[in-house]
Length: 294
Image (cartoon, rainbow, N blue to C red; front, side, top):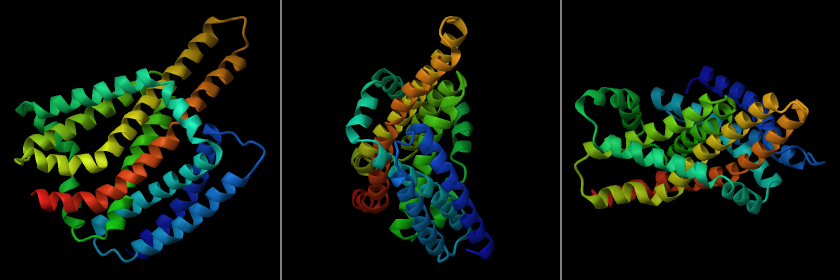
């Protein structure tokens, strides 16, 4: 990796630190202590230095750029996980998940529908899926022989970027955020189904390639999309109530909606924790199991 890319990564890390703290304040307001944010700042700094230095040893340009991008995302995700772990109890996160079961069910149905669609795609739709997969072949070829930790960084960065985007950023956009969550689930399911339909391998091969990390990754992605749907519905309901209810002050209505949205977003503690486990398994165990099954 050249010096320009290294400096770009360092600058991005600084921006990410600010983004992490802003997102952390939205999800979990400060409760009389700066401890969680101080820990997150230290964690961000240490990870930034370690990943930036480690990526200097990467030789392939395509892989280096992707590794740098996902390294920055890892910094955001790990720092946010530290904040959530410090400020939210696991029981509270699980309670937040229990309140959104119907939204997770909708997300899961869209994923399965997309999977079935991908398995039975007609020739006319194949180019659309191939376009979505464009670039993965080059990345796969360039990553051959890469250390496990680098693959884990890419996998964790990619998965958490999708999870955070669908559950927070797009979720804040009325109506469109909900459609985006549904679309992302359908598209991911279609991509998985399409890839499975192309590979002529026995069921044991797919089981080895999907189950070890999939039992952690798939629930995490479904919960993230379901959280996006839930947050979007809460905020939309709050806006509608604010317009219709003339007796209750608008500010109070929106404060109540934001409080409910924060409770829903506590599920990110579980989501990010599951994705850490999934990335480690997919980068270390899954390739070895595929080699044995193939």
